Structure formats: C-alpha cells, structure tokens
Image 1 (cartoon, one colour):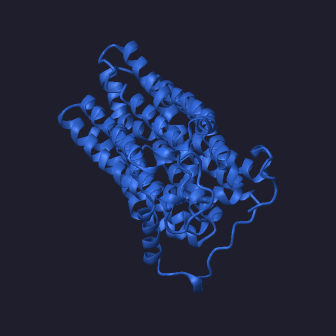
Image 2 (tube, helix red, strand yellow; image 1 turned 180 degrees about the horizontal axis):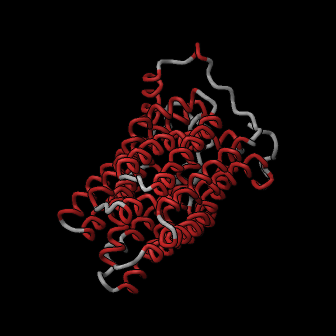
Image 3 (cartoon, helix red, strand yellow; image 1 turned 120 degrees about the horizontal axis):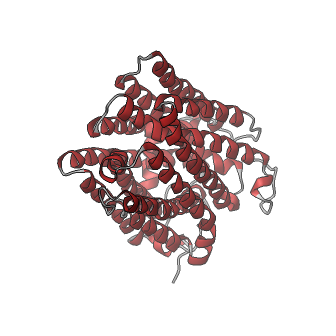
Length: 433
C-alpha cells in the first residue's frame, strides 16, 4: 500500500491513482468505440445476421469462461500491474489486425471471431487484475470514491466514444474505427507502466498450492458468504440481460425502430450521461439509504430502465428513439451506481490474498450467465422476433432484484469493517433493525 496520501486526502492527490484513472479512461474510450464498431464490421462489411452476432458474442463469453477461474488464481499469485500491462499490449496487437485486414481487403468473419475470442481472453485477465489491484493502491475508506471516479470517467468515455463511433463508421468504416481502440490500449499500457507504488508481496513459488486447489478455495469463499452469494447471483442474473441485449439490440434498433449507425451511436452515448449521474450519486445514495437499500434501489432502476427497450414502437423513429434514450439514461444510471457500490463492498470485505480468486469466480459466473443469455437471445430472436428477445432479457434484471431482496444485503447499512478470508458470519454484519 502506498503511503502517498492520507485517508482524508482527496483521491485526486494520489498520483498513482490518477495515472490508473487516465489509463482506464483512455482504454475505455477505445473499447466503447469497438463495442459498436466490431459488430457493425460483421453486420455492414461482412453481412452478418442474428446468428453470426450471437456467435461473436458467444466466443467472447466462452473465452472468459475458459480462463476466468484460472485468471483469479494467477492474479493472486503474481503482481497485478504487469498482468494489466501485458493484457493491454496483447489487445492492441489483436485489434490492430482488424483495420490492417480491412485496408488490404482480406477481412473475414473468421478473423473477427478469432480476434474477439483472443482479446476476450486478455480482457478477462485484465479485469480480474484491475479490480484486485485498486484496493492495494488506495485506502479502504477511499474505495467508493475511487470506484466512482473510475465509473464517472468511463461514463464520459461512453458518451463521447459511442457518439463518435457512429460517425467514424459512417465516414470511414467499422474496421478503421477499431484502430482507435488498438491505440488506446497501447496508451493505457504506457500509463500503467508509470505507476510506482509497490504491490503487497505475492506468495513464493514454494508456498503456492496447486492451482486447482486455489480455485476451489475461491469458490468456497463465495459459497460460504451470504453476501458474496447474493452479489454473485444478482450480477450474474443481470448479465443474462446483457447477453440477450448484446445479441439483439443493434438489430432491433436498426430493423425494428429504423435507426442508422450515427443515431444509434448518439443514443448509446447518452448512456454515458446516465452512467455519469449514477457515478455522482452512488456514494451519497449509499450514505442516505444505507448500502444495502441503495444497492437494491439502483438494481430496480437498472431493470425498469431496460424494460423500456421492448416497449419501443416499430417504425415510429422519433418515439422509438425516445424509448431507447430513456433506457440509456435510467438503466445506465442505476447500473453504474449499483456497480460502484457492489464492487466497493466486494473489495472491502475480501482479504487481498483471496480477492483475485473471488473476482475470478464472480467473473466466471457473469460470463456463464451472459453466454446463456446470448444463446437464449439468438434463439428467441430467430424464432419469435427481436422484440420478444428483448422482453425475455428483462427477466434477468427481475431475478437480480430478487437475489438482493432475499439476502442480508437488503439490511446492510455500511461496509463491514474488516476483510474476511473465508466467509462472512451474518451476526458480524452491520445490519439495520
């Protein structure tokens, strides 16, 4: 832990955190461009339909499933900053191959699949390391503020990147737009490389258990804690929604509502405004309502907001766009606030020596459920239509609310004061009467 700032200092006086914040902001800007550009490269350049988009999303999720649990174990074994740098450099090379192939006229759906799969492998390692690295960089009472700052910058990147990506795709092409992401990962690697704060020592090779035993320990920590079980169930259920929407949203917006890439980019960018609102209100909402009630309320907002999408009328472009804008503002606001509170809670209650495996376990469950949602979304969209698929996806949010409601989280007033290594006894939690 760096001794650079005192706990009462502003998070912006923490130089290493500011470097991490810049790295996150730059790479997220590029990633949001690619989130729109990669499926559009498949749709507009290669003529992909619902099934091909479902395969694309499924490959990304399968990659996370393959390495998710192992990533958690290795993140606890090794220093986390080098893992993040290596993942950034690898993603820069992979995504850079898309515009090169596009310029040479040899881009194929097979290459898009391979790049999406390998980049998702690296993203899993990066994300697990990133969420495990922050608590070693800032003080415990700064976690909510630090996560809120990261989410706020992500929301600004989302607003600007999604808006710009639509125009980049229309003016140049989707493959060229992806080049922005490749450059952003290179910049992120350089910025993370400038962080100087030492990480806690990792276990010596002789002290390590077999990797499968370490993975089992992480699973037992999550299974043994009522709070971590509820967090896992809620976030995994919400990812069923994301899986369905990832398969169907772009096609629904273009084919049913009648919007073009630029309009979709602008509307998606407005989600950044909603996410920014969520980042700004997360800490205050947690203080006012209590941590558990704030998490429940923000998940409800996330679910209600997403329910606006299947309600958007077909062919009525202005009204349909209004429904999609409402979804971006309401759902993204609730979702970002929930994520800040949930991740901060997770980072606070799990011992650093176990945090990578817990994060890996939760990431694995998210990817598994998102894969299920992707498959369900593709099947329902092909058989019953895109609107029906979007309606089915909303059920994932409803289930997520149920996990929080029927758990100790609903009665949490604050973050439990001490980390745990195995489980959280319910009687030790600061609950309301």
